[in-house]
Length: 252
Image (cartoon, rainbow, N blue to C red; front, side):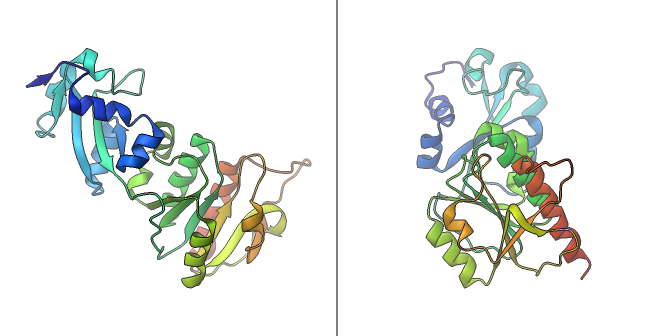
């Protein structure tokens, strides 16, 4: 049966997932595109619904026999892209505030607000073997723009969102993590050795680290720069730092 109306209950619920509050209330988010949907399933994400556009349904229904076929006009109501590939999935995620102890290196986003920056940092975290990303007072990690920037990395690392600094840093302390913070004026990161369990913290695009975090740093690191540059984009700086940690730990 083909879904033709945007008033269909499944489509109504799906469309509401464009709203951050609804995503957080339901613990669900949208994944759009052939690669993202395939990667979600391959990595074991909890996929609760799949919708395919009628005009390209033949391309997907054999691989996803459980998918609902949606008429093209109705499908447009749940698509977030201009040139949709014709497939959308609904996935479940860990509820906000549910902090899971990391087992390896972790990344902490301290009030990072730009979705492109957050997505890039998640992607680099996955590439460098950081197993958990904590977002504190930051952009919603399950927004469409973050998902697109992360390029399937959501399915390779644990993601935890919270507003509770105290709870997060208590968790890190209980698990004996060294808190390494990126900030201007810190120690040159190149040539440094890092223990196996670090929590790398990067701060807000304009204001840097919060006062709470500054007071809890075990080590402050920075990148050397020429031509009197004071700082780099947080995604660039965070990515360089993660690779430096990765390189340092790979020697041992």
